[in-house]
Image 1 (cartoon, rainbow, N blue to C red):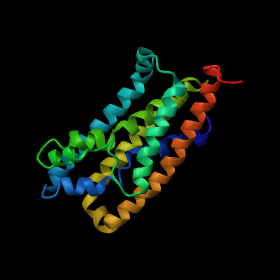
Image 2: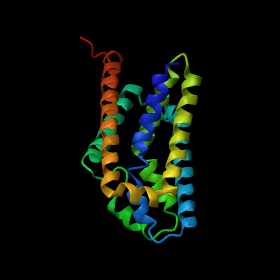
Image 3: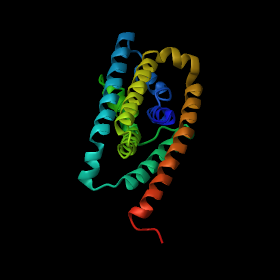
Length: 216
């Protein structure tokens, strides 16, 4: 298997989960929490993120079959969704597909912020779910399906571990980077994600042309 796939899988999952870019929100939501409370919230967020992404990695193909969704159609739709998220990140905005204003207000009043809205939809949002499902669908049509599935699983685990460490040390990271530093990092991730999204759309179109008989 090409090492490029492993690097690409990790970079893509890490970019869409965007743990560093989410630190300012985690910092604001857990303001006033003790260090132990923050650790518990970080642990809940990481567990929920891992569970959601692995569930969709395992059962994504079944969902495709249930609703009659083709891989090219999902790739195009997913690419458009990812690009909208990337565009928001590039402009320093929080994508509405990840968090609504109402959820932000509710988060300040809940003890289980590690589950909602941090775990879902901040970390394991529609963009992350879409990304994992597309990566898995690509892996299953290759001769190295098992190896690539293992690589995707490792990419998810590494992202979750890094996310946990980033959240546990969010106070130190936030003080070092500041809000502007975190936003700059988020914009870099947004640029990477935009390129991935465009690639998804182009590949989806190229696969859809022969599948739907659109070739002249």
